[in-house]
Amino acid sequence: SFDLHKLQLHINYNYEDFIAGIKLIDGKTVPQKGDLLNLIEKKIAIDEYPHVLILDEINRVDLSRLFGEFFSAIESRDEEINTSIGGFILKVPQNLLIIGTMNEIDFSLERVDFALRRRFAWFPFGFDPKILRDIIKGKISTKITDEELEKYIINCQTLNDKIDSTEELGSQYQIGHTFFAEVAEIYNQYSQIQGKDLNSIFDFNG
Picture (tube, rainbow, N blue to C red):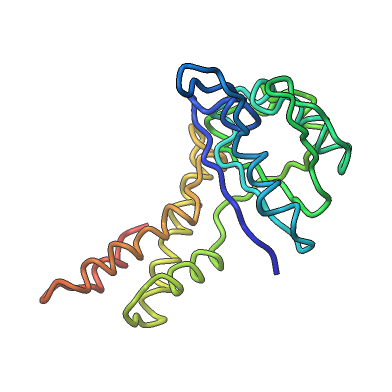
């Protein structure tokens, strides 16, 4: 078993939020630990089992500035490194696994700092019918037939195949299974409305 943690990155999320920063409290500047330091000290460092940290949409931030000492810390596990702000100790334990996600069509890998690229394994993770099936089954609160679900999944696959074969688009523009899985929320909402035809939600021309 493992614990899963997720940080949603965005254009205003920076080193001060992630590692350490300075805040004004009662008229005084006080160093404050960021999300990563708090997560390691309060949860990860006290456990022996694995922790997985997902950094969602890493393409939306300046990774070199965001990571700072984290670059060296993830390479030299269990080594104490002083942060540039606040003088805190950053030590990444062996049981912390880091996953970064990015949208290929929004960001070129060539723009990713080499220091980051050489510390991570990179691989595409596209549309997966099996994962889509599992997500929908796990989220839907009322029963649907296997026939309805399979028809929907086939249509999703057909749509992605069409995108892949279109010269102006290609595989990098395929729609991920998490997007298609949002149909589960729509289905659950409609299931509470009397008289709605739920079957039509899963029926579209791929």
